[in-house]
Length: 362
Image 1 (cartoon, rainbow, N blue to C red):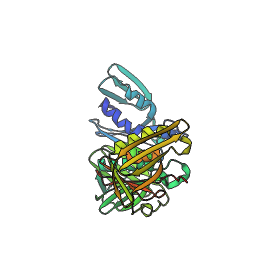
Image 2: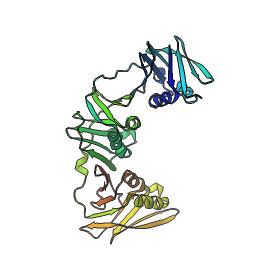
Image 3: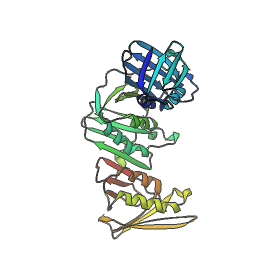
Image 4: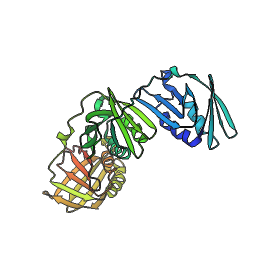
């Protein structure tokens, strides 16, 4: 059975699947790429146990076939193809790959050797793929990385009648993105942050269809469908810890703050949480850091408001920079106290909220 397909289409399609399939695994079946042909559709699929992926390409091939082959080898061959088109001649025991003057043969294994995957047919929910990707990109950085932090290593998704909200926190910082949109699904669940990374890469502009089935979320965007295993556990009541009163507020350009923090933090003590100190008074934000190599400082003019004239705090420089990163408009920094959480708002995109807990200096 022969399939002729543009090389670019093949490599882009394989890219979605390759990122999920592990190159090495104690389970040999997980390193396999399943290839299915079904009258005009060429389907590639695979899994790493946390994510199942299926990517479909429309072709003019007729007939039906199911085979499997090592994903890593096939994708390396595909990337190196010299011509604009590639011909796959799929036999019973091997596939011949021809492109321009290049040709190679790869051994096949039975389709049953690959993981058995189940993708639901009905996806009742829908949301714009670009919107969902933007929401997840804004909060992903705040998810925990340590294994012991359990559900903090995930991103909470709230799909309610009239709004979508995604939240991530590691206990020291928090990021939230809230938009008023109806998805057709009413549920709350937690997706592992690593799975969120893959979902962001997969989402494309246009409708993304959603379904919840047992312990997984299914998302179809473009020609690719993902099954994402949901995390067990209860996400903390994050709204309870977001302050409501702010005696000091400042407004400034986010890039100005990010650049200043980056410069000053070069001198921050790496063994002391990369500490940078902020002091606000009379419309001036002064940033300082001190470590074993010396001391640095920088002052920024800001629009200062609030009931108190000044405030002094300290932060982990990376946590502060990460929170500022997604901001596209003017940045409003809202200080609730010297040891209680500070809130960052994007005046250009009110959907985004970030919270950073200051370091204790006493």
